[in-house]
Length: 67
Image (cartoon, rainbow, N blue to C red; front, side, top):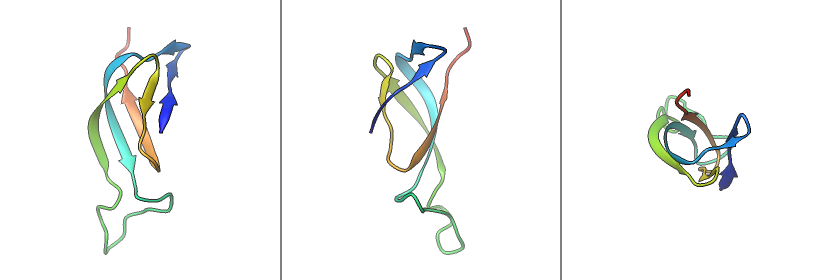
């Protein structure tokens, strides 16, 4: 899903490190039989004029350097 992201009214643009926590459904969770169904994964994300594509059923944390 395309999502627009602003940080203090500034649209992100460029490549950023991110950690994505995603599952195959909104009810996904880890248990004894599936301990790695939902795990955080490091990835690089590209933002163009603030827009990036996010995975369905996910939480994304983007690392933005301080200026």
